[in-house]
Image (tube, rainbow, N blue to C red; front, side):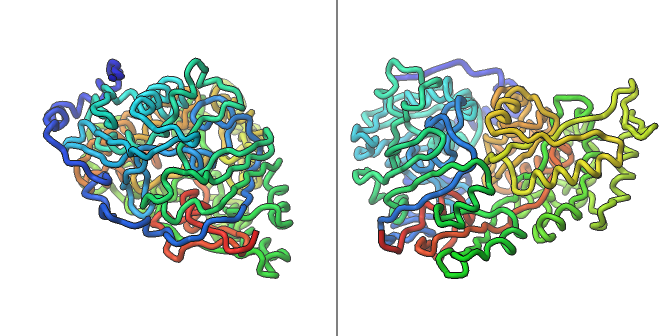
Length: 615
């Protein structure tokens, strides 16, 4: 069976690389050897006979019930389509892919639903052999037909995040009773890994049904260790560990998914959720404010020792957290206006007020990692990569760009003076005390904040209010809009906002998802994660270079170049970074002593934690 389609015109956009890469791409159909895992560069760290993930306890006991808290609500239990709001944790518990990840390596995958993986040196294709024992939660076997269906339905009807990979697949074909091969239409080393990371769905479940618009009751059947046992729409989801889970003894699964039951409870906002946690109704919670962690976690349960505060360092990039500026709208399409807004944001004062100055500022998209741009002028290798895009580079990209730093006082005189000069250069005037464009239109905008949304960050409302006060000194009429999460999603989909809260986590293995985050093609796609609407050939070119790199050194330089273009693009007003994870949890919840490279995340808590108390 074969699923084929014509390549999209995106392939043409890679033409500048084609003369070299095509020889590599199409020369790689030599015989490949089956392997237990695959890495972006080199070989995976874990051998074929590994017992468990290095940060899991293979002897962890099974049992116990925990409750995790979410803010907002949900109206869907299908995490793979655009429609509806879904509990964000759901796919981590209920669904699996052909390969699974080790979070102790930058980018290495190991066979999960797939028993073996075959790939040529060119990575022009990848072939998977399914495990004969792989089963959906209803006991039916996972077949090649299910794999073919999953990639087609996700690539055409699923959430837009799945569409990019599908467009880069020339064909998917069954090559044996349990074998499936993906052939790609362009050179991209990451595609072989991405092909192993899509959730596998049951074709039989969706025959004759509308996958993209299915009702709440149509919960996608998965192969994962947990199943949805019950739910109360918008209020609670109860997940139970499947006693007949097929993969219990796999090396990737030993010591993981240890709780018998996980409940997801939903609360109107973070304040109500925190009170529920203090009352013992929630088992564990992550804190993202160092000042709150230091001052508000002394409630009776902590004093008694019933709740423990645990800290988890990590080595992953900072990612980007802050206020994203919608460059689709004037005057935000002018970099001078965006720089003025950054200059007016008095980070040192706001950080001191809200976190006690405990958290360092994000300095670039990949700060806190080896992938971050280096201070000062671009090194020769990075400058050479950016040279073909010189006309598209904003000031500071090559010379070096650094965020402004104030003296920590409330006035921020230097920042305000610099912002005023930039706005004047952009054609604005503050005559009469109101900042106006050349045609007399006042400069006014709103900052959109979601009440109780996962995409919000701790302290965003207070940060925005302090920021608005500073903007008044420039004669700018800025307001803070707080709406529910559903309205925020709708407005972001329609690009109906000026500035909004923004959080984008990044890994040590950035790849194809970068196109969806800030690639030009994604800028005007409904549901895009390119919230700021970035369109820059240099960004696209550096992403292409990352995906065609054949050495780790070339990849690192390309990522550092991308970091420069994004940071100097002034798309986001960055705030603080979280260089360690903070989790307060029930004292009966235990975790391994060995932390993964990436530190905390859903694949750490709750995946490798376990219960030590009595039911």
